Image (cartoon, rainbow, N blue to C red):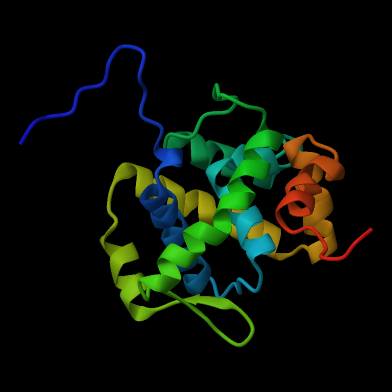
Length: 188
């Protein structure tokens, strides 16, 4: 088998890989299940998912709990102010738009199911999530725990407002793709 090589100008971006994003989601579902946190909507799931990947966005440096959680994240390898190809707000919009497709991958493979009131990890999904063992997976679990506990306390409205504030974007930017992807039929 021929080995693929990256040229000096090519980079590998895990976030562009659907199975990488699906594995992250599966880890988040596993943590949510352990914490008895419900995942009732794709909107809430998208916020949980995005801020788990960017946990410092939800932490201030103003209280002891934030300082403690920041230190815990730094100890497992997260770093504040990592360089990125786009602003936090633009990444939030992009990731939120991909959440439905990533969730569909998990549902189609029987790893997540759609319950009456929330999405839930299945036994098969939990089994696979438990097998994901690496420094990255363990760090992601910690970030998910910190983020899910904090964001679960917020109402849907508070979560939308906080997400806009943390991502540093105006709410119109956050809703821009909803208007393009889901235009109202017959609207004039």
